[in-house]
Length: 233
Image 1: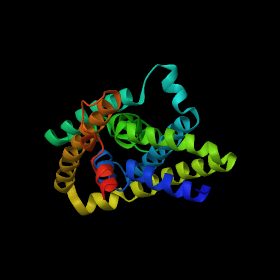
Image 2 (image 1 turned 45 degrees about the horizontal axis):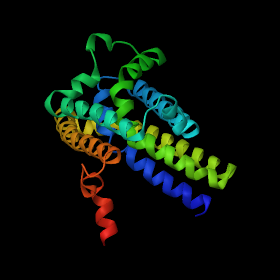
Image 3 (image 1 turned 60 degrees about the horizontal axis):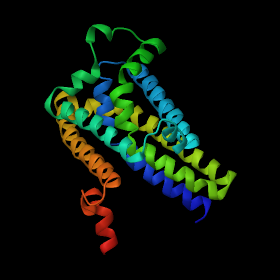
């Protein structure tokens, strides 16, 4: 596999896991009532957070988890539990109001106001919704593969992370248009449906973590169902 093929595969996997386009309705809900200029600033802050966090794990890899004595299965289970709690809140409550925050604190504009709103969104929006255990695991795995290509592989991997971060920013810049088209009721419906999907994804993370840390407790086709289907065909 060439560095180009490595970069293409890495980009597809990371973009699918972060799913900036699918998270546009959530970003629109989180920035409801915010001026377009401030919404774009928040999108820049989110993309910089994605860039910095993924770059950190790309170069530290498993070393950080090993330093704290944390295995990848344990990280998957913990991330799955966080995602499950988030998904339940999205599916059962007015999550758009929760993401939007306290309206009494939403007054203001400019960089300082955008930074305060972003700080409120770091958990759970930026992490673990955007950067979850799947994205972190993928970055760590591809970082180990990049070593076989030397500096070209490391540069290709960093280029992929920059491209995904830029794609996230551009996708979120379109959120005001999405917000106007869907309205509050439409956003609430989408968020609740995404909450149900997120609950299923969280359970899948937990099943995969248990399957990786035990022997025969979880069926392999339950932990990685579509991978099994592809291998069987």
